[in-house]
Image 1 (cartoon, rainbow, N blue to C red):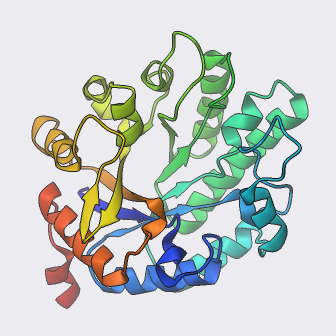
Image 2 (image 1 turned 45 degrees about the horizontal axis):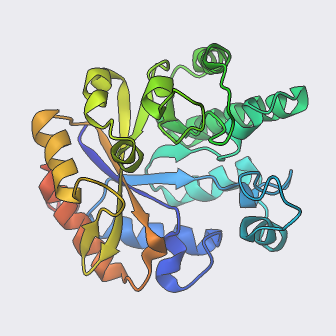
Image 3 (image 1 turned 180 degrees about the horizontal axis):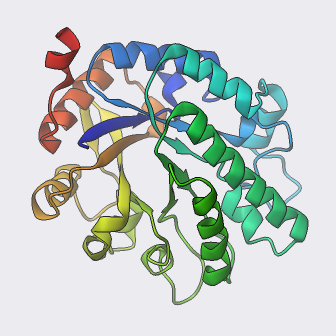
Length: 295
């Protein structure tokens, strides 16, 4: 299953539109898939589209209204069924779904209503995956700012939903933590499925440790800034190519890889993105789609 995917996050910036512009996102997905350089997409179900309330991950200890909350006030709202129907009508392959990032914040809040909200978001995400035929869900499953995490409580919740949705691999991403004595690796290793974010693994200097968890890794997020048709890996002790070499040659990983561009495609073009994705596909050693696309 050597598949190359592209995150839909910030995709609309390529046309100078807001990151939450759903119609532009779908239009660009169609354009990019037609170029035969990727196998599908990781669809980011952003909190800005949810009518329940604004994103919870900014300015939580301040009365200041953050940029995402302002965006939530102004942007269009969609139910999960509306999103699923719109995407399904395109016929585009959605290889994974990134859940609303508020899941972990809600689960770690300690308030029953918030915990129930977190569970609702899990259920919604996995139902969304089923509706789109996606086999992988990606969760930020803990609050990155909390000082305490009940890992048993969190893993029990996810195990319960995994049983309800056996066709979807509910994966946990190695996002940062503020718990003393714990790293993202130490937390994520408790879960059955992992989406490995290479940037955070490098920042915490624990990328090599994930080799022991390779059978549980169902998705790898490659992070990079697009510059002159190349990916640049900022804020890391390793280069982008060194990370590619590790997962390709040392790990011999041959699963789902998702490119998560950083920097909001600042100054980039569609053509530059296509070239960079084509080169990435070659570096990974993944088979070209262009032959099968022409066929």
